[in-house]
Image (cartoon, rainbow, N blue to C red):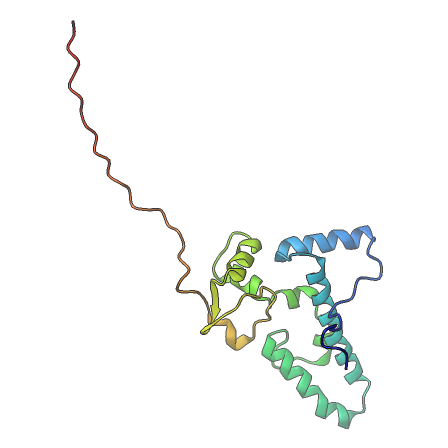
Length: 180
């Protein structure tokens, strides 16, 4: 265990950060999903790497041990919505970063409430305008479970500004000026 004041990092940098093709792919992903910085992308990649490592280690185990431990991993991935009920470990190994980023609250809110950009959805979340059930969630990277997805709503205190009703202005007619 470590010192709680100095927690361990939950992300790893890429091994070759200056690879041009890799950088362009990262920038495209950042813009598509509205991520704040590359660290958010690295966190998602590290989480995906952890899940895939668990699947590879399960494949290396004996069949009896594997039958006990595999349902635990698969149940957690099904609950999050990364794989289907009848998925195998091969499906887990085929997961991509987009599958994980699609389960973020920011992405789901953008698609559900048709915000124009992912950054608008991020702002609505950070400002506390999104609720899941009766809880206000202010973390855009929150991973949404399948059960929680139907409970995502706009907060009752969030009012979308619509166009105000037209104001009637009285026009006073001036008397025509006398011609001289």
